[in-house]
Length: 262
Image (cartoon, rainbow, N blue to C red):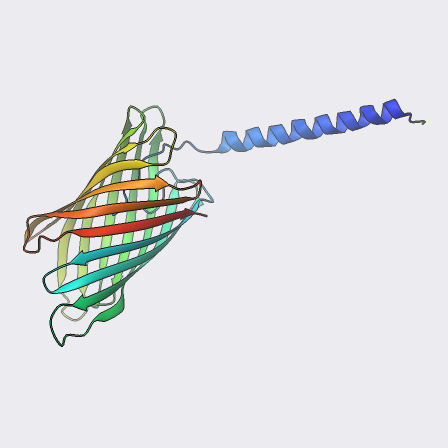
């Protein structure tokens, strides 16, 4: 069979058209298979294991620093987090917490140590774009190296968006702490509520967290007004100020978080 120039051009055109059509079908299929996800503003201080409604393959790395000054010492806390979603809706996280304490008392040495290891999971069992709401449950296992104990922390999360740019979220659950040396168990209840406003067409937000711990000693509350700036599609930075309400140590604290989407 003879092929002239016009026939060759026609065949090339057909192959290119088929290739573009096939690519479009594959892309449409991939997009159609993506599960629904509602964007919720994630609090900076008590952050989530992974985005609510996480999609398979999502990954994130966080660095954090916390500075708190008391009458006895200056506490500097550092954390590193790696979180990822092995399947849709499920997030996993590994977090290490380090502390450096500089004493204000003469002849008392400073300390620098690995304080805690946290292993967490979180599953979004309800995601509704129509209602702009997500519900999730999770669990954190905490290993306390300083006090020689462990803690069990199941939790529940409910998040709701209002008028697109207003976000509310509640994170609550018990923390059951067990000490190896004394075989004693203590129960605290955490209630963390947050309200945020996201700036339209950006990854910026301003808001506040209300972090409460309820124990046999009473209710300890800390307000964390905060701001987050999206520096690029993958990088963001946030700052929060800790304002304790009541308690023997009524000291300010500050917290910085660097967020990098892998």
